[in-house]
Length: 546
Image 1 (cartoon, rainbow, N blue to C red):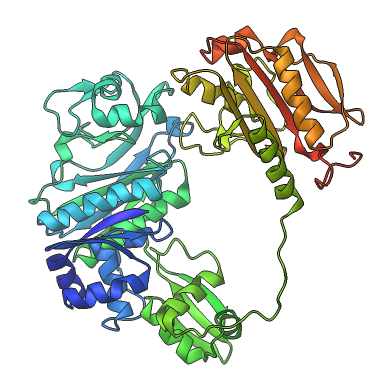
Image 2 (tube, rainbow, N blue to C red; image 1 turned 90 degrees about the vertical axis):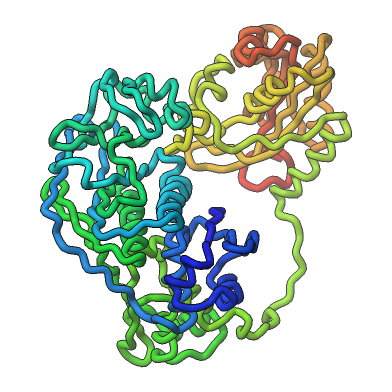
C-alpha cells in the first residue's frame, strides 16, 4: 500500500474545510490512518486508487464526500501547439509515449513535495517499478520545443539530475543511484530511449533519470510532463492522474501532439448502470435519483435515465472502474457502510476441506514426521532456475509473464524441486543436515495442479536416502507405485528412478547431479524427490489413478 503524507495546511486550503473534519472523515473514503503528527498525517491507500496518492486527489474526493463540491470535476484542455516526434527504432525498446503541458503552477515546499511523491507512488502502483511506466516532470521554460523521443547510442553524454558533470548513459547505469536501481529495465537494449528538445538538450533518459537542465524548482511555472512505457493504458492513466492533480492545485492543462494525435483529452467515460442490481447487491432500496446523488458525492457525473437506469460519467483519473460493481462499491461508500444492515445468510452449511487441500495437509504431516521443514517458494521464477541450472529441457507448457517486474520472475513454475535447491543455496551458511520440503501449485499449459518435493543435504546424502524418503511418503499417502530407471538429467545416472503409477510417470527421486550442484553453488550431496499429487487417492482430476 502507498503511504501518502497529507500536510494539514495544504489540505485545508484544497478541501476548504478544517483538519478535524478531514481526519474524522478520511477513513470513510478508503484510507487507513498510519500516523497523526502535529503538521501532517500519513495515510495509506490501496493500489487500486492511485488517484488518491496525492493531497490534491484526496482533497477532491473529500470535497465530494463531505458535500462541499459534488459531481464530475471539469478539466478543460486546450492545445499547446507543441509536438513530439517518436523514433520508430523505439518499437522494440520502450514504444509508448504520453505527454502534456501544465501551465501556471505555483509551487511551495509542500506542493512540490506532493507532485514528486505522486510521481514515485505512480511508479510503484501503475508503473511496476518503472518497467511499465516511467514519469518525467520538467521545467518547460528551460528547453525549446518541438521535442523528440529517440533511440540513442549508449555513449551519449548529458548531466543527470543531482550531478554536475556529464556522464554517458552506460556510466549512469553504473554510477548513478537511480541507474543502479533501474538498469535491469534497459541494459540489454543496443540503443537507449532518450528525450531531447529541438536544440538537442537532454530532458530525460527514461525510465532511469531526468537531466539536470530541466530540474523542477519552486520557481518553475510551466511543466512538460512525459510518460514512457510498454503499456498504452497504464501510460494514459499516469498522465491523467498527474494532470488532474495539478489542475486541482490551480494549473491549466494543454495537450501535446504525438504522431498527429493530441494527448491528453481528460474526457470522462460513460456507463449506464442498473439501480435494481445495485440495490440487490447492497441490500438497500435505492431510487435512480438517490443513486445518482450518491454517485455525485463520489465525484461521478450521474443522472437518472429512467426508474431503473442511471447514466454515469466516470472521471478520467478513475482507472479502477472496470465493471458496474466498481461503481456500486462507490455507492456503498457514499451511502455509508455503517448504515448497511446486517443480514444473516439464507442458507447454512457445514464446511469441509477441499480434496486438494486435504491431500496437501496430509502430505505435510508425513514430511514433518520424517524430519523435513516446510518452505514456501514464490510461484514466479525464471527459466535459468527451472531448466538451465537443472540441466533439463524447457517444459513445452511453461507460462511466461508478459510484462515481468524483474528478470528473476519471468515464468510460472512447472516444478518445485529447483526452488528447493535455490533455498539450499541461500542457506549454505547454515548447519547440516538440512531437510526441506514444499507443497504447492504448478502450472503447465494453463492447467494448475499440485506437486510436493523434498530435499536433504549433508555429506552422506545419497540415492538410498532419497529412495527411503520417497517410499515413506508414497506409502503413507497410499500410492501404489513402481520404480523405473530414469533418464532425468538433473540426477546422477544409475542413482535415479522414475515413480510410476498405472504406467504413468508421477515423480522422480535420486541423487542430484554434480553439474546441478555446481549450478546452485552447493558443496554437499543432495538427495531429492518430487511427486505429482494427482496420483494420491482422493485427489480430483487425474483419470486412471487409484
